[in-house]
Every structure is written in structure tokens, then in C-alpha cells.
View 1 (cartoon, rainbow, N blue to C red):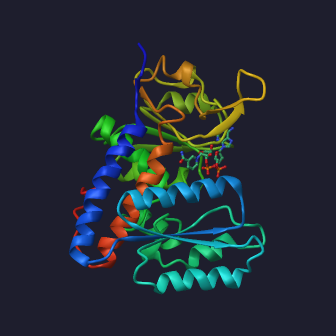
View 2: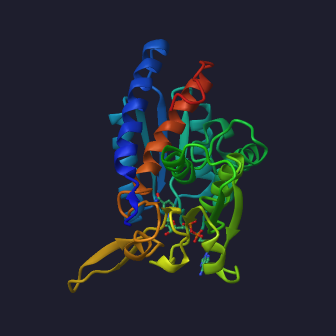
View 3: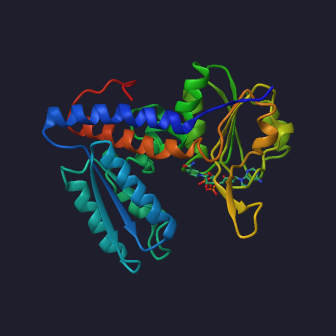
Length: 297
Ligand code: NAD
């Protein structure tokens, strides 16, 4: 039987609608808009597209978008000074520095300079620590979006076997922490894992965040499992000169066996920006000392 398709695009649209309602509520209560600042260094084409779409989505949600562009040869001191200024700016609730940075800049130092209470990407070690010990903080957008899709599909995740493939700080590790907090039995697989197919076959939940096109085969999937495909890989298309996007999971094979699966595109991708807006709005409420119920968004 074919798997149900988990429609991340529709879920993200609905989430953005709820964020817009709460953003309007925030403005009514404080007399100002919740603010998200995005910093872009250099001219990287993909980063420019991301920054533009983040700015557009922020404005569409009724929040203020502050875009700061620095030239590709900006110094570390200039970038840190900008981050410090944004930390001190009361109109700015969330700060995002678009990665990757040009190689002469030190990403870890830049991330460490962002105030943890404005770190809406959730990359600061303080927020990684808060996630690890179960304190409120900011969780990286992509794994939090994956968790929202999983809970929407499955309800309680308690006791389920979850396998996360990939151990990056941005996706794999925080994903594993989130699943552990939901009382899953979590396995983190990575490039050195032995018998990966065998490990994945035990999983009720598979989250693939590897960056290798269609690596996870249908025969690896336990029948009925829920499969979340984080991968975004551009490969040659069927027509000459054309490309197409595929995930880390062989969708055609896996969708014949899984119970539910996210497509690429239209699965996890749209969730990332929606969760960024969510984190920025949560930051606005917290920074203004206003209550926001845990399950409000
Ligand atoms: P990364 O390169 O930092 O990490 C990849 C991980 O995969 C590593 O931990 C590595 O150990 C593991 N890995 C590599 N080869 C493997 C193999 N053969 N078997 C098992 N594990 C292997 O990547 P990332 O930043 O975590 O991103 C992963 C993928 O998710 C990429 O395709 C990226 O484009 C995509 N991504 C999508 C979104 C989104 O919004 N949908 C956001 C972030 C990343």
C-alpha cells in the first residue's frame, strides 16, 4: 500500500497563519512589531535567495524584518560589532546570521556573540545546552519543524524507535535530542555506522539528514514506518541540462513501504522558514515579558 504523503507545505502555511494572528496580538499589546534581523555577508547566490525569502515571510507574518548586508571582505570585527548592535537594539527580537560565512570569518565566534535570548536559529551553545537539559530556549528550525510534522502525524511518540541519520549540530543532534525528550528510543547513525540498512530497519521513525541523494533505500524501511526526509540534493534531471531536487531517501521505493513520508520538495523545506518565524515571535513575547502558552504555536 502506498504511504500517506506528509504535506509540509500545507502544515507550514497553516503554522504561518497562526503566527500572523499571534504577531498581530503582540503588536496590539506592545505597540510595536516583533522584529527579526537577518545578516548576510557576501554575495553567495543561494544565501541571497534564502535571505530574501526569510525577509518576505517575516513581513507577510506582520513582523518587522531588518536586513543587514556586509561586503564579502567584511572583517570579523565589523561583523561582531553589527551583532553587538543588534543584541542591544530593543526593536530586534531575533537575530539570524546567514551561514555559511566567507572562510576568513569564524562562524563559532559569531554565533557565540549573538545573545542566546535572540538566537532564533538555536545554534548558540547555551541553547544547545538548554535543549540537552530540557530547559526552555531556542531549537534549530529544521529539526523542530520535523518534530512538528511527526507529532501531527503520530500524536504521542513515546516508546517508538527513532533512527536519525546524520549528526550535524544543525539537524541530526538537535533532532535526536527532541525525539529523546518525546520519550523515543533514539539511535543516531552517521558516516561511520556499520550495517546502516539493518539499523534503519528497526525504526518506527526515520529522519534522514545526510546530504546524499536517494541513499536510503526502500528495502531499509520497516513496513508502516514514518519517514522524514530532510535532504535537499540537486541532481541531473531527465532532460539534458535540467536539474531536479531529490531527498536523501529513495522516494519511489520508500513510499511503497512506509506508512507516511515527506516528499522533496514540499516536505521539510517549507517548515524551516515557518519555524524561524515561530522562534522569532516566541522571542518577542519572552523578551517583552509576555506570556505565551507552550503549545500556542
Ligand atoms: P552535514 O553535511 O553537516 O551532515 C551530514 C551528516 O550525514 C554527517 O553527520 C555525516 O556523519 C552523515 N553522513 C554522511 N555520509 C553518510 C553515510 N554514507 N551514511 C550515514 N551517514 C552519513 O549536513 P546537514 O547540514 O545536517 O544537512 C543534511 C541534509 O539536509 C543536506 O542535504 C542539507 O541540504 C539538508 N538540509 C535541509 C534543510 C531544510 O530546510 N529542509 C535544512 C538543513 C539541511
